[in-house]
Image (tube, rainbow, N blue to C red):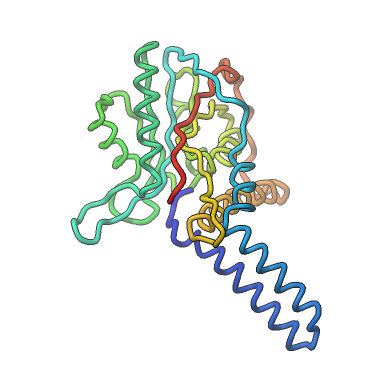
Length: 279
């Protein structure tokens, strides 16, 4: 789920515009009764998305997973962290992670500390290139923040070629194939986890999910932009899942890799950090 959040949030506006255009077209064709019904249904749907009722169901279903369990850390465990984009600061100069990336970085530090206390050989694998062409990769930038938080540089692996979630999975699998490792744990946002696990399984990896956040709408009578945004983000995830299966059917995806048995995967889920809803 890398890239500009602003581009994703435009989906709701396009949805509304499409409804207006279809309604106007029906009126022009003198189909006034169907136009009124369509316009009303479209308006109600947009309203329910904006006030959190319909959005809440969508984002909850997208993030739904089995009840989290404590991770049984083993020697050589690798915590995989997926990039969430970067941004160039217009006034101060320099590059920072996008705001939604910080929960992933924090989660990685928390999990590394717990792993280091329980066993040896723990590592963090940062996956993310420079899709925006800012001159620095996500893996490098996030790695510097991990070091500031106390994670040894020797415990951090960098995958710097990926530009999207599919390439996160592909290049992470190639990197891990060259290095002995223990169980895998995947850190990404709650909305992004379902699609990420699907892609990683395609390349033969079965990491235990450890989502960095849980997204919930802000209930209100009037529609608000936050609810529309998270609804758009969830929709993007389902479109990505649908595209994956469509490409598989067309034979456009790389052949799937046989998965290795996940070491004690059922006991390796970790309770996520739950962030408060926006107000």
